[in-house]
Amino acid sequence: MVGGGYVGLVSGACFAEFGADVAIVERDPKKLAALHDGRIPIYEPGLDALVSSNVASGRLTFGDDLGAAMENADAVFIAVGTPTRRGDGHADLTYVYAAAEEIARAARTDLLVVTKSTVPVGTGREVARILRQTRPDLTFDVASNPEFLREGNAIDDFMRPDRVIVGIDRSGPDGGSRAQSLIEQLYRPLTAIQAPIVLTDLETAELTKYAANAFLAMKVTFINEMADLCEKVGGNIHDVARGMGLDQRIGSRFLSPGPGYGGSCFPKDTRALTAIAQDAGAPTQLVEATVAINEARKTGMAERIITQAGGTLEGKTVGILGLTFKPDTDDMREAASLPILARLHDAGATLQVFDPEGMDAARSLLPDGVRYCEDALSAAQDADLVVVLTEWNMFRALDPLRLRDAMRGNVIADLRNIWSPDLMREAGFNYQSIGRP
Image (spheres, rainbow, N blue to C red):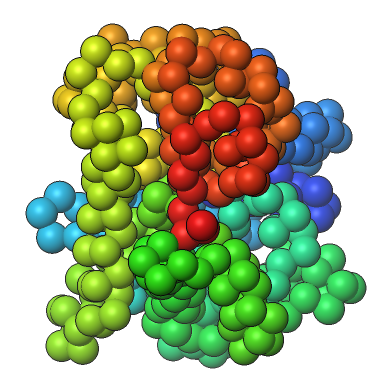
């Protein structure tokens, strides 16, 4: 497994749990040292125990020597980052192509090379070209196996997936039969639970990942717009979402209103899909609109908070509950908190924040002068207003009266709808949520 980041580490640990011998190659010295010390460099519930048990069994190892890791390997997975390329929205494939060339140089025998990273259509063909050009003396099978892991639920998503998508290059001498056989062996534990394994071509597999994430991003954006409409006409977005979600054609997931989607996937993948489509001459106007609406929403939420505070934040203290883009992760990538807090800071607010997992990652991303607190009530202490940005369960359990006693003011901007409007108003709060009366 080339890459010990989120995808590589979770996938490698889960493959080891399936019974495979997995060697994860990680070149970041700090990450590698942490893994050798038994420390998990990312927060993912259950991952520490899974890694520990498989390291103890000898099925999971870590190192920085690709050649040593590939010794006796049947397959090599590429799980490196594909960040947004500056300027045009395309995915930066530098790390993917460098990994492919390094794999080819280190290979001692024929191999299956599988791209696990999220990559644009055509990447698998280019990986195949690099492998064969670098080592024409060997035969490389190539496949695309995109991940569909939700942060905070990644292990369950891998072990009990909705589906597994595998695109196989059928242009080789055996028509991809060896690649298919190896993939089926790796995922054999999933056939016992009848998880659908979809075998297709490289291009279809690559596009499926982007299409799925873009559709979910549109679903989030749609419910956010419906929440705005509810506020104008007196509707309740939770009832609207429930009424929609009970339709089996729609489903109930990703219908929770909020300050806009973030994370490592939706923002990057929607931008990449629009770039892919533009290059192909088939623009995805719905996805383009989704990207624009989501970006505007994050800054719009900051203006909403300022308005609720009386139009100014000069000299005021704002308590922030939650920083990460979602609960059960320490991931700050594209989190709605970043543009929102930057705007509140520029408006003159003193910010005191708490997040149970994300504060270390947030320190280099948030403005100077932010106070990092030890718990939620400390973040609310003497605050003129409190803003909920991440729906951690611990925030739902806060006693409204204790929160009220801690605060100097009484304004609550609940951007995740974690509390009952009636209960909060009974406790004396000037309480506003998203899309609810």
